[in-house]
Image (cartoon, rainbow, N blue to C red; front, side, top):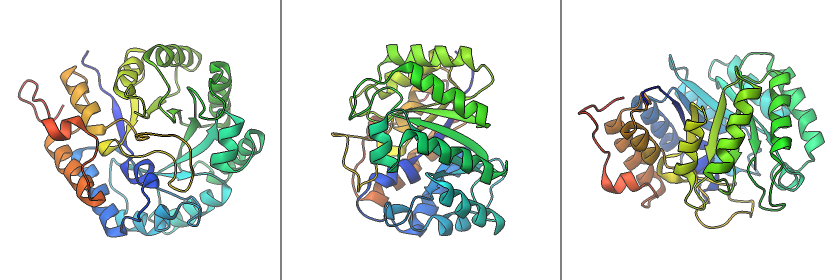
Length: 312
């Protein structure tokens, strides 16, 4: 297998939203700049969540202003509601906004109520309004959370997820992320859903977003790869999960470790465009920023060197 994938680094958003302590703006910007040096072309930079609800991103506009625009790099911001899109537009008009926006729905009513404080029907109305407001000025990423199972309701009907993906496509989303929010997916369920959706929407990029709560994240990523997925989310050190102020999920709630995913893909001959030496520097910087060792196995063992190349 020698084809390539695109990995979006999510430490600065999905990772930091789970942290109880605020990470200084200058530290965030330095980490994001390190991700760019490592070769990431898509980077989840921040969220326009309400600063009282998710204090980790009270500095969203300042972070984006400090980054500016980088040729060939798309910074992404999460938008839970139309007010968030209005903030993104204001930043863009000032010349320092995101290039991509994530628009959120949940595949279950209970998770929608807990995470977005609304109903599924009302959130879809919000999404339609957000897409109208965005006015094609951003690349729009639809996100279906709890796509493989809900912490409150249990199993999620894959047919409902398929309907949500189709609805995002009809509304004009440029890509759709399938989120295994609490790490309940298995390679079997992943392969079935990605194969189904790939056949239904052959021109729509599907993004695999796995959490490693039960240790299956890497296996699920390989299953998605084998099912045709070429777009992945991950976070340095395997950090992340629900916002720190929201109580659901247990154990290690974080994302698939970027370091481990990249190392495995490289060993499999899958191109990522990422430099292991720069990734190692970013990995160490992320641990320093949070003041503790994180969860990457590769951070402890070192990147494998395949065919003497440092960038694949």
